Length: 165
Ligand code: MG
Image (cartoon, rainbow, N blue to C red; front, side):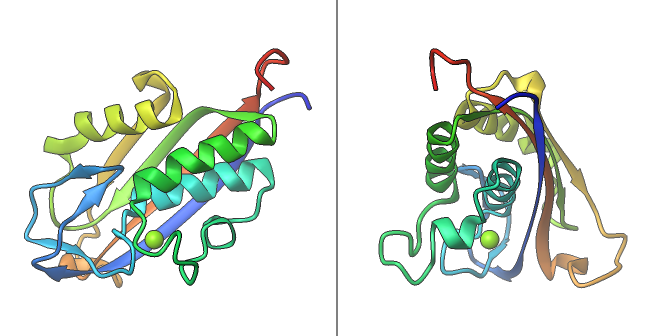
């Protein structure tokens, strides 16, 4: 294997009142949270799909099917750590990620540093290789007015050095 590869991830969940909103394990101060069998962590889920996509390893639903009791209700951050291990088994490691979290509420900015730090730690990257941006919908589309939260994510991976593969 040589050279870097790129993968794309996307996830979306409906939001409802009184549910916790968690992004890569960071609990946000919010009155709305995702409706999901799992923790509905759109950022973790999108990063997993981008990493798996880059490595040619199917997708999150194939690796962690939600009808398997082992993964039902699993925290997104735990699945992300497992996905990074799966990547290493295949001879790859994360190199850089960039994500856009799309939601009208809550504001991402106060939580951004914590989210970047948690994501960098899970990926074994420095914080400057991990970017997360918040974007509002301007009242347009199915995610508008707190109806949902989405995430688009792009990840770059590189071959593990021979000594670690
Ligand atoms: Mg999801």
